[in-house]
Length: 84
Image 1 (cartoon, helix red, strand yellow):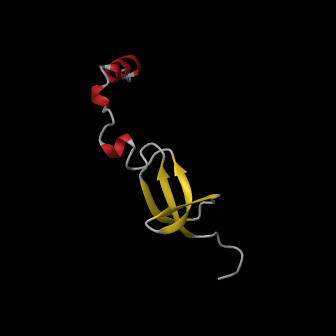
Image 2: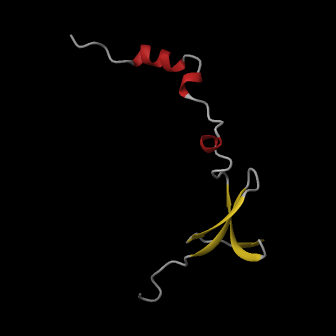
Image 3: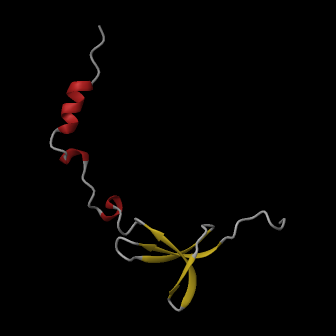
């Protein structure tokens, strides 16, 4: 491998700010802060949402069927007209 052309690929601590969930994975993301996790210091990257807080993964996402007829109103208003 050539020197100086590859990004800094290392272990990074990701923290979900909405619920405090932390996990370590390898990444090239640039960070300015560090934090300790399980006795080891890692570069820190703060996330707004992760799989622990996202509605799709937690099962709290509203389905299209529970939208109170809005989908049916849309289909009636903008649906295809029959070909003549």
